[in-house]
Amino acid sequence: MPSNKLVVGIDSGETKTNVVVMTTGGELVGRATSSARLKVIDDATEALNGLVTGIVDNPDVVHASVCLSGLHLDTEASLFRQRLRRFEWARNGLDIEPQPLAVLRSATLNPNAVAVSCGVGSTAIATNDRGEKWTFASMGSLSGDWGGGIGLGKAALWHAARALDRRGPKTALTEEIEYEFDMPVEAVIAALYRGEMPEVELGRMAPAVFYAADRGDRVAQQLVERQASEVVAYVRAGTDALSLTGEVDVVLADSILAARNPSLLDQVEEGVLQVLPEAQVLFPQKESVAGATLLALQSAGADRAAIERAAAAF
Image 1 (cartoon, rainbow, N blue to C red):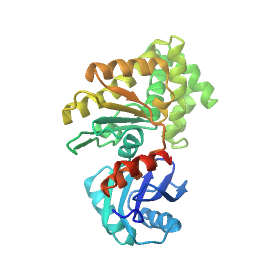
Image 2 (cartoon, rainbow, N blue to C red):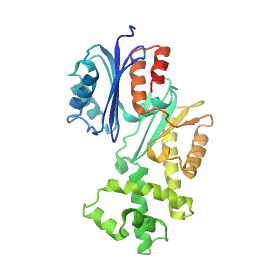
Image 3 (tube, rainbow, N blue to C red):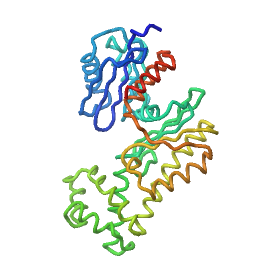
Image 4 (cartoon, rainbow, N blue to C red):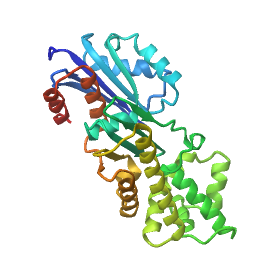
């Protein structure tokens, strides 16, 4: 394939969108970033087009890989694809993928892999060497998810409330909540109930949960244990669904896992090795847009040298 052809890699997460344009030979053409989180469909396709054409207004794009958070339904992905097709750069090869796939591919080129992202919420993806993918709905408690920053914060508040009215055991999380929000636990609950505080603010409590657990608070330790078991459950589910065995890479990503709390990681790694004894546990060393770009190059048929050259650019 001529190396003057172009590919586009797009990664849109919870807080920003990154776009990279490369030649099929693995040479960087340009990149763009937007701090605005793109909502699925709506005006997101126009925003992406503006970012891509701001780098190069060139229709000679042979493949684009667009990895988005917030794509929960097949109908959403289909409509997003349809709207992107209006633009010249998206009229040839086009993949619409869940954002965790970009995270996975940014950390490993091993086709047999599982990636678990645990930040504000949690999600995961698994792939194998037969080209199959296993994904999760990732709609919070509606789809069976638990944990992440918001989940840990909500659980901490739940236990603090029960400690105060004596339904539950005492916990240092009560004091940690009052310290973090500079108000009594009852006032935090009231602010959430009245809509004066968005639920996402509870994510601020996640570091305090680990702090209390590390200092021996049993309630906090149980929350850390549950978070670890949830991460391992994703790995087990992806492994079973795709019949993964042998040398499988397990990628741990996003803020809760990236903080590398020793207690959490020890439990996660122990659980992962029980599922996959030969697994290698990895943390992404590159930004996830690198994964989206490598996906585009692979889909475009770029050779290994080009892919390695592209990876080295990040």
